[in-house]
Every structure is written in structure tokens, then in C-alpha cells.
Amino acid sequence: MSYKDLREFIEQLDAIGELTRVDGVDWNEEAGAVFALSKGSVLMDRFPGYPPGYRLLACPILHQKKIEGPAVFFLATNWSTEQRGMGLTRAWLERLREFKPVPPRVVKTGPIMQNVATGSKVNVLKFPVPKWHEDDGGRFIGTAGIQIVRDPETNRVNFGTYRMQVHDKASLGIHMSDGKDGDIIMHKYFKQGKPCPFVGVFGCDPALLLAGGGRTTHVEGDSEYDFAGWLRGMPEEVIIGKYTGIPIPANAEIAIEGEIRPGDTLPEGPFGEGSGYSEVRDFPVVRVKAVYHRNDPIMTGQMPLAYPPGRGDLKDNFQYSALIWDQMEKTGVREIKGVACYFGNRLIVVSIRNSFAGHSRQAGLIASQCHTGNYQGNWVIVVDERIDPTCLNDVMWQIVMRTDAKRAIQVLDYLWASHQSFFDPSRAFAKADYPMMPSKAVYRSGAIIDACVPIEQDPSWHRDVRISPALRDRVMKKFPGIRS
Image (cartoon, rainbow, N blue to C red; front, side):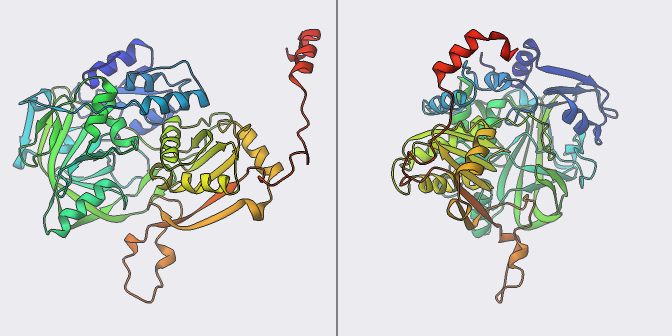
């Protein structure tokens, strides 16, 4: 079932019983607590001090929390399958390989233009922007939206999902980690001595959010708009921004146009990231030139949750798993039987049919260095094909019982990291003998655990002790009550 905009998607969420409605929530800390304690998607309205109809949808599309099954993801992607576990990852991998660009369609106007504010009338605090966590340094608006820029060299439109803090009614901080496309494009403008034109969308349909935050495999020449249109099954309608020339989703709820000027920074944070609180740092500022919104606007947002899941609650992230699988095969890694990711992509498990000397180590290295696996992919574990990577109990058995630590573990240095890491990646470089820019020293180490049985080991050595399927079936049939 497709949808034209966020409102149609909300109706579909409601129809399948995946939406909770709550009135009277305070934007100051309560909104975050409601989201954290809820089962899934929450639509909040009637914030104290704000007009009725100025709403917030907290919807965990990218990282579902406690929902059994990917029902919300199926709605968001206009796709479904009966497969679960590694079968779900395989199904989504095959779906990704069917991608055909659906370019956006330019229109003259749309619902986003129902309300326009420029100049002194700009005020992003007219919306109930949450202070998500109790110890956050302010209110954060860019937690489940998209931020759009255009490459000055290739003219390609790019968008991602980056957190944004409200400094005042016309100034927004933006945290784009080094190496992200948005950060690279921004610095291209700076090197030319120009400000970076910028569009922020803070209430958008889930296809746009998945395209911006789902780390899609890049196809040369295509933009995330093309991917979003393919997901929804129809082109995204866009309006060309008056101040930036950047296409703005015509059916979005809230959007801004502005610019980021070279050297214009302010302290941002702290903010409760998934790894814990990130510290205060100077980050670029978006100076807002125009605010657009629909009547009765719906802001989209989501707070990271840092604490460990409950017993049995840890599920693999099949979206990242499929992307890593796809990128590994495109580099030539053979005989991949499964990929599973946990905590985003911070733990990656790859199952292979170990076929030649060096095969398992190759698989681990490529998984750790492909685009989706590289950014904060702290741990990679490679296991034999009989191990299901979605079953961490089996994965840990393979590591504990079938590996030699000295042979199995390889530590890599100077990998792509983020200041959101639990460990401050810039501190180790503070005592260099040459001038440093610590804010740019965003490195980390990572580990590959090659838990495959060595290819040269005689298979008759320590064979598996297992009950045969025939014996299991005979005993279960003879004694049916033993499993009750």
C-alpha cells in the first residue's frame, strides 16, 4: 500500500494498530520519555503553550524498538515478505537489487507552502521542538528528518539525516560527522569561499527518511530522491527553493531554507546519542532564511536510546545487513551465507562457506571496510556457514569453543569514526609534534574475529557431537511429552 505523504502513512499506521495517540505532553523531557516507554509509534498533540494540531510523530522506522515483526517497515517501503530472520535479510537484499530510479517531479507549489515566513518572521520555535533527554544541552529538531544539499561540482542533490540543535529562532546547529556526504559537500563550498545552501525538512514521509538515513548503496548519478520515489512507488513531488535552488518535498510538513557560512560555528550539545552523551563541541550553524509548513504541521522525531536491551530483546538490523551483504558481494567476496548487524552496524556477523586460505579474513576485512560497515562498525565476526548469524548464542559458541584468540583476532587502526563514539577519538592525537586540528582526528580502532574453522584443519579432528535428525524424530514421536 503506497502513500503520498506523511499523513497517509499515519492513517495506515493507525489502521494496523501500530499508532498510539497522546495529548498534553510537555516538549521539555516528557516527549522523550513517552517515546522511550512506548511500544512503537506515538503521535503527540496539544503541547502546553502550542496550538492544537502542532503535532509530533515519534516513529522508529529505521530502528524498531519493541514491535514484534517489521510491520512499520513494510508500510514504509510499500513491500512485505513472510520471511523472518536471515530469510528477511535475504529478501530485502534481493529487493534492493531490483532498484530502478524514480526521479522526483518538479511542481510549482504544494501543501508545504500553505504557511511561509521569511526575514524577521522566521521562528523555528513555533513548533514544539523537544528536549529529548533530561541532560541534553537544548532542543533538537533534526532527529528524524532530512537535510538536503547540492554538490557544487557534480550538481547532484544529496540528503542525509543529521541531528540539529535549536540555538535561537533563526539559527540551528548541525552535527555532520567527518566523511558523511553532507559534510564533504559543505566543505567543497567552503574551499570556494562560499556559503553552503541548505534545506532542512523536519516532517517528512518515511520513504524520504529511509533514503536519507538508511545508508543506501550509491548509484552513480542518482540522488536519494530517486530511491525514495522507488520505495513509495511514485515520484516525489518537489518545489525548487527560492533561496537555495534546492528541491524541497512539496508534500512535507515542515521545511527551512538557509545557508552554512565558512567559520560560522557555535557550541552544540551535549546530546544523548546511542553510545551515551556526546560532549559539547563547536559545530556549523545554519542561518535560516525561510520557514515553510503545512496547516496543523506534524514534526517527525526520534531519540536515540543508549541503555542495553532487555534479555532476549536484541534483534538484528536487517536493513544494514542487506546493504553490507550487497557491498561485500560487489567487491568479489564469495560464498556469503548470511549477514547480521546489531546496535546499528557496531557489531557485524558474517557467515560464509570458508572455501580457501584467507577467505574468512577477506570477508572480515571487506565487511569492516565497505561503506555501510566502515562507519562505526567496531566489531566484525566471521563464522562458518552452519552458524546462523541472527542467533548470537550460536555465534558466541563458535567464538568460545572453536577459536584461538591469537590467531582469530585482528585489530585495525585509523578507521572511520565519529565524535558520537563512547571513546573520544581525538584525545590520542593531542600530543603530536606538529600543528593539529583535534576536531578532525576522528579515528578509531576496530576488531575482526575470524571464528571460522581453519581451512587446513583436518575435519575429522574434534568432530561435532550431535543427535542425528532421525534419532531426534524417533524420540520426539515416542515421547511427545518431553518438550511440553
